[in-house]
Length: 115
Length: 111
Image 1 (tube, chains in turn blue, purple):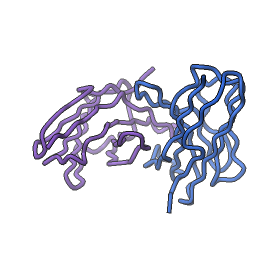
Image 2 (tube, chains in turn red, blue):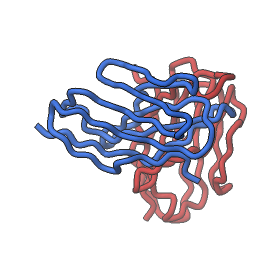
Image 3 (tube, chains in turn purple, brown):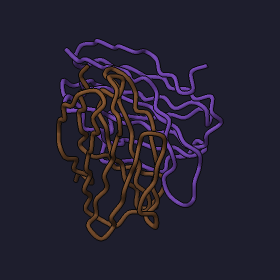
């Protein structure tokens, strides 16, 4: 029973292409996230959704567009892929907390390679 | 800008020894969390310590928090080869659910 799942696990594509990464959580959490981890293992938040509403949108190029069809799913669509987009993308989820961040559950990651 | 800096960047010890990792951050925080990441895997939550707490234990893990020095430490006692991983601290300021991660410490435990 995978709590947070992502597909695909690996994604290799050419510059300029458009691609999507899907994420699903079966934990009943209200909040979901997308993180980017670069080659130096630096992990940075990109987006966060709470009950399908965008609550965190860091300074991410607008080529990146998250979509949350329901609170169990958060997908990431990337247009016009660039070499610098190569990274590992992690989805995560947590309970909705008004008192600050709670424990986050991470997916296994999607390794994106742009050629 | 990066909220947390971890020290050391890499640590190599033998099985049975203790491992200590430190995390420093820049602004006032609400909570601080520690996560482990095995190679090629997602992060796994280890422990959460609130800003009004000074120490917390979970199994072989001991976390301390010094808000006056804006620092935290993670101690793993009696390390095992399976503890080999990268360890990250993460802080939040109580705004939304945003976590800001540190740079991580790579721990290698050898037999």
